[in-house]
Length: 383
Ligand code: COA
Image (cartoon, rainbow, N blue to C red; front, side):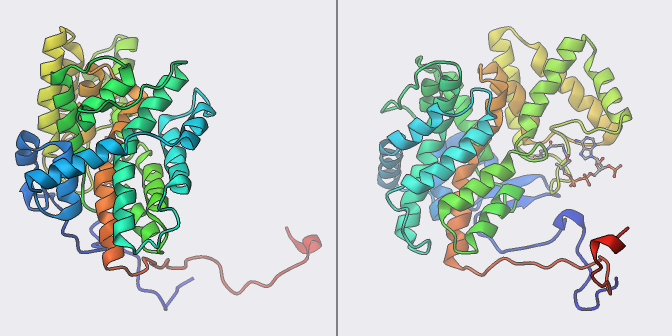
């Protein structure tokens, strides 16, 4: 049916469609630049910390030393989970996908949050919730991982950075400073990325004047998919599959592409050239491989990169080298995407606050292309 009342639909997947103005980050797909609040990602990766970057995303300015200390102390104070949420985690299936566990725990957090009943437009209450969520994402992920392995959760430890404390809660061992430093930079790199799919879903939920936890639950569910945050785990599964098959990386790429499938960790909707986060992670992957003596994952990743460049002209995205980096840090493969979430919750909360600050319901239309002019018929007459 030709629907004269709606204009024709934009490109599939809303490619190229601008849905909002944002002051939070700038993704320059042509030049391969990522800028948070006016600061180049390379500058932040070199000099900032995840805590400072999160506050920069939320407030729009680099914090004073005092504000950063206060924010860090608030995060530390909010890391512990409520007993109700911990009890819930005890009941999760051991073989549950950690992203499903995180999504469910975040949703539950929303019920037990002290500001649960607050008006979403109460900026101070929403900020308190945002801080609790940023603080608790690592605790939820680490507690779930320990419980599914039959171990007791390890509580947060004061005096450790966000990244170091996550490694501590995961293993219960003193985190290696280099590992914590690398994870800290990885968290900076993943914290924000314009109107990516999960951020968009968070904003759509918030725009109905639903609460922050509902918006972040939507975002976690959206990040889970393999075309978005789920790609980093898929990259590692590919590397492990290459090892299992005993094939070489080039053959694997050829076979995958010849079968019409995608090689995970390549391509991007916005970047037409390099994803500026990839080379930073590639360097970590190389360094950690050399340090541990297990150099093959990085070497194979480089060979896959070259094969994809020559066969498809596609460059790696953020998920490609984060796989071999996290693997070298000893992190289980299915926690790679939750780590993405531990970081991106900073960007999500900044976007939800921005949405509330200048809200209008996000409600696009569909162009109807279905049947018309039909009349209901009884069962006996249906074919
Ligand atoms: N492997 C193989 N081919 C790929 C590819 C990949 N990873 N990514 C894109 N392509 C190809 C598509 O097959 C298509 O080729 P064609 O025009 O010959 O059919 C072309 O590149 C454009 O792809 P399209 O799906 O239209 O791009 P998109 O903008 O809709 O998708 C992604 C972007 C990220 C979803 C896509 O690149 C992808 O699936 N990548 C793998 C998953 C991933 O790494 N996701 C994390 C993103 S940060």
